Image 1 (tube, one colour):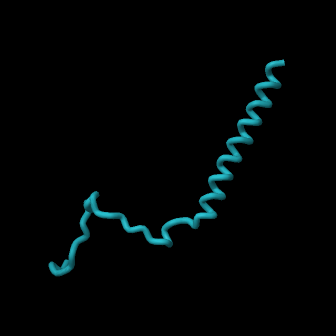
Image 2 (tube, helix red, strand yellow):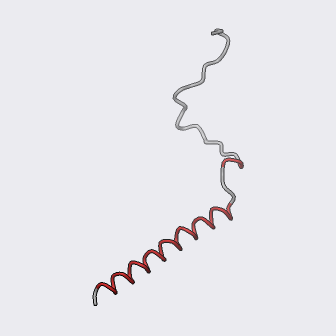
Length: 58
């Protein structure tokens, strides 16, 4: 290996500011849609749980 080539730092400085590029993040509408889907699925699962709970109590 050539001594003139810089070696990457294996332990970056934790205090260094993180640079986020626009390509690295999902667009806001996609994030909102995923959040709505996750909440909706949990509400639906809770409704099914309630139906089974009420059905088993009789």
